[in-house]
Length: 438
Picture 1 (cartoon, one colour):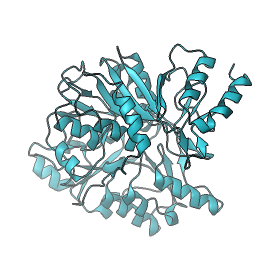
Picture 2 (cartoon, helix red, strand yellow):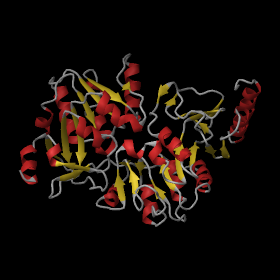
Picture 3 (cartoon, one colour):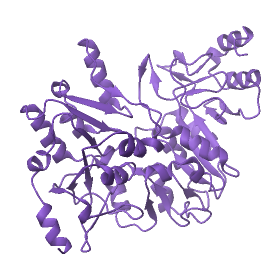
Picture 4 (cartoon, one colour):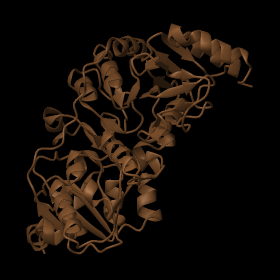
């Protein structure tokens, strides 16, 4: 059959598309902007009506339409989320469930670079659901904003259901999906979920200026999520011949492409193209991605492979942490005794940048939290180690930047105390004097 005939033969309603899912199945959904609202609505309605007694749901990074549908509190006695990266949505669910004396989320620790392998080899995914861009005349969709694990799991799952949204950008790179690979299609036009960045704080601006001063012309960039990395991007507009190899592509990085600071001319991998594995932004940003040959989408096991990252000289990774101990170990995922987010791809890029010739791994954080009442630099971490002390290189707060490589534990502690908030330096110095670091 030609592509159009095949498309029509697989076109169905959301209700019919999820009707083949059975109780006890493992269903994986795309992450972030790639999550399909119409399919998630139909799936939630099926659970609500009693059609599914138990559903195992696997995913990274949920969005609001997931919270309104398949992650509703009243469904979580039958839906068991296996989440690999928590957002505010899961944190709220966990809090409400704890108040009711029950658990509601199974957090699954995994590096972002390993997520495709986990979901394609270690978990038997029965159905994968994702949003895609419209099919072209040759029979090809694209995964749009979300290549990540989607392009791999779409092909390893027993069944693939796609939601075609004309607002999903058509993206170049390793993002193609052929109609012959799809089991069911639904059509649903809806605005894409958008990511808004709050205004940066004075501390953000101070740290961003420090970080921007560490980045040379010709560097290749990875920026994490949040206002601080976005503030760094805003201070790089006068740089020349920057490159992009990042897990997350954001409007801040897109602005550097638009203004000419990014040319990707110096990259060893994908020269001339900005590489990413998932993207989040606003409507103008999605329009920028659409049909743009300078943008290259690739699977997360490629983008986040430290060996692949390191092929680019002067690779610079900028990532935020929640807490750092006096030896340099970072906790970027655990807060107030609870899982806050996940390890994501932070360690992937810390190691990739460190292995790059002339590369720099930069960990950033405000010196304090909770309105200045808590130091983020501590004698001992309150949660798991996201970045081991062996891997931590440059650390920046609003009080300066230090390079921990080659320093002893005592020298590291002294350096980190120097960039802690002055109010907490005496207590940290006392902890160092107790000699608990060796």
